[in-house]
Length: 330
Image (tube, rainbow, N blue to C red; front, top):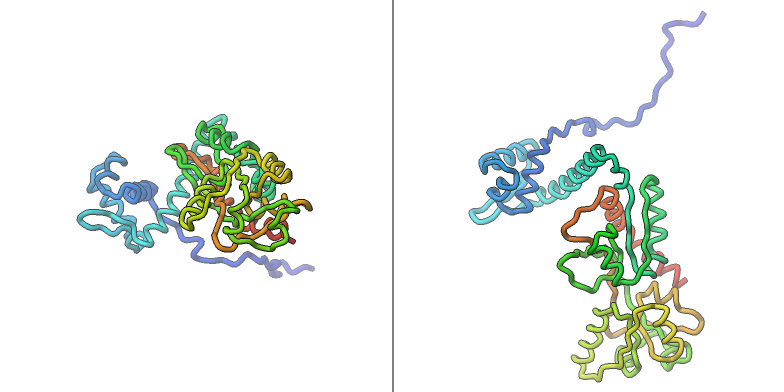
């Protein structure tokens, strides 16, 4: 007869961390008030934003600091600044509250599922090389998010962000716009690209002094590069090389192959397009780079899904670009 008092089979639970079970006991209104103070730099302005009295603002911050046993703000007679710990709380709290707001909007809106769709604009080379693997990696983590990738010329990319036709763009942004903000992701060396039969083709590297006697073909959106070359020529008292601009990469490469000049391209782009009839060289005496990043509207916020994708880009873009550079040169 089976013993009814036999011990039950052991159940192996995951390790328990007592810290994980501690209630946060944080008041959302106190966090919102703290965020307002950090952003506005003033207790009185925060009181205006929160529609409460200044003593109430002070009391909320005091309660928050007592709960966390941490000084969050440094007050002087002229200003209010967050401490190091206050900045950490500000970053975490703004992300958490934004996520909660997006979730509340999704719960309250019949068409909220559209918030799981992200429209991304990019120039052709970025759209064809770096973004496909990034999108695949993101979709592996978040399979319910749909990403629409728009492949278009630089001017159209910027127009799509300014008119809210796209949520975000990934480009090498040279411009300055009152409507847009730029978040850098990575910086890449510019390589010199010359035709196979060119006088510089037999070299592994070149100096800018060796480059400037030859006509240069430049993509018209590379305004920073054009300015840098002109400034170097001015400082070194050289005559500026003839500059011929093109708006399309394929046109520029066609001009190069026909012997109309030499060009500079970002390392990954140069190596991908370094066919048998083209040669890439490092320029040793001047640092020429192209900076990639995310372009967003200043005034409009992002959906929760778009914010998540932006964070993923900040984590993975530079590594993906570096892997692409290594693969292209191998």
